[in-house]
Image: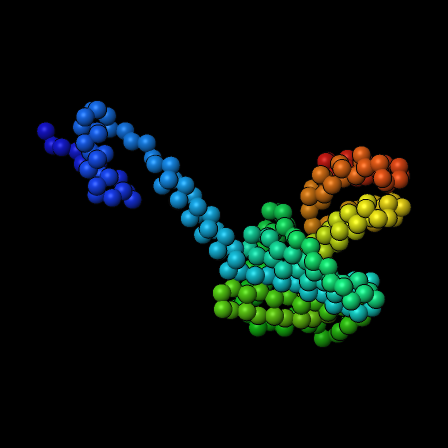
Length: 243
């Protein structure tokens, strides 16, 4: 009868000899994967995914000195993790907050970058007619050693326009979260106005992913520091978000 040969990847020769003897002694031909090997493989996979995400960086910057938010900068990796930094008018302070894009928002953004073929293209997105009073948009992408930046204040390129619109939604959603959290601590009377602004953003599709706000809205409905009108508004918005 021909003897069956079993192989065990990632196991040393000494370990293979020991396992073969154990199988012969017990008459079993089943093995249990070593926890250490499985944990190492899982860790390697996670590290590989993190390195791949870190290898690509996306950046969007908006500048208009006359606006209440004269400048903001969004930076993120291929996994949607990053930060937003912004300034207030008449203030020299720069605020920095973490950003994590939802899976849906990240998918839309990555598809638009791919549609632009940004790193392989030298397309000028600036339209012939300029509108500098509306602000300057800067988009940038870096992959390994390759990097490209483009600026424009108005464009007829559909994908470029949709891309900056997505980043505008990310900024507006992030700024609302920042403002409402500050207001809860130091200026609760301003929360009704902030809730009204959020309602406007929601009605005109001005948020990156409204579902990300569900935990915050739920918390606002029971925050007794807020005026009743703000809590009631949060409850109405929560119902909209849950639909």
